[in-house]
Amino acid sequence: MKKFLSFILIFWVSFSFSQNWSAYGIKVAPENEETVVKIMDDYFTNNKVEGVTVSLYSIMFTAADLDFTHEVIFSGEGDAMAKLYEPGFQDTAWQLFSSKISNFVENVFSGQGWRNFNFGETMKKLFTTVVAVFLMSFQSLSADGYIASYSIKVSDVQTFAKSFDDLMTSNFGQEFPGTVTLGHFAFNGYDDASHAVVISYDSEADMAKGTQMFYSPTFGKFLNDVQSISEPIEQSLNRKLISGGNNNQADNSVYTTYYMSVKNPKKYAAAWSKLIDAQVADGNISGSYGLRAHTHGDVNYYTHYVYTGSSNIEMAVEEQKNLMQSESFKMFSKNAKREVKKTTMMVVMATYNYPNS
Image (cartoon, rainbow, N blue to C red):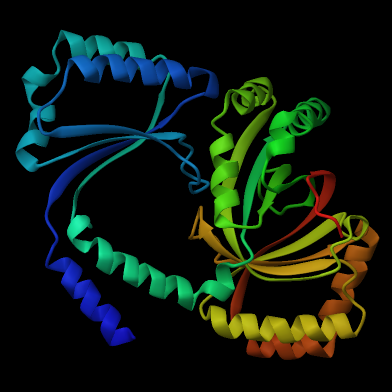
């Protein structure tokens, strides 16, 4: 299999070509998004640069230290891209465009480079085959769905919770394809986040549909209502690897989560599974439990996290103490190579679309 994949990679390289690009990360407030789109559309429709494609993207997930919401990308062959940097390009129309859009965007970063690979129609069948091989190889890992997590700093908890409840009890919430939890961090280390919205999706399709709903007018109004009392801190997407335990909602009112960096995921998963089996046999896990793999967000922070659910804070602390003192944990610590980055305790404030136990 390794030789086959190496061959495919070399084969792709032979089809590569070079195309230049410039990227600009910008921050746009939700209420200004339509205005920014219109300003860009008006300018680039009437001032096309031959051979250059201009694209505007909305950002779903990003690293915590890159606070941007959209990305503008210019792409084209070298000669065409060079026109963007000629003195004559920045004429009166460009200066007017720059003046208008600067009132609605905040520049975060910029970058330039070139594209080394292109996968087009000539590679379609081969690419589909390789993707199918990978999907079959990892089917057991991705079958359970995803967890999307959005941590935020809230200054007016009551107002935010009321606005969030109004959103989730509306048609938007009733049609949302995932279980949504609003939680408060009782303990969160040095992280500025005070709360988190955690979404459990059963499938890739549900995750895609739910994320797309964030661009609806209803969700845009919610963001506008809470922007003065909340600040986004971090967003991440995580794949469900192992799930189990008691899913009764009353027994999962508090979540203890361990974020870590793992170098050998397969060995870690095997060691953690043995630990969990021993803890369940000892009656030390009253709620649910799970192992997740980090797929999108700040990949320099953690690679995986594990969690356990408890009925209340006292139970969570008691179960953690029993865990740390157990023989199974001592054995796990010897065998599991990982670097724990942070441990948090989140208290559930509200849950929506919770599945039947």
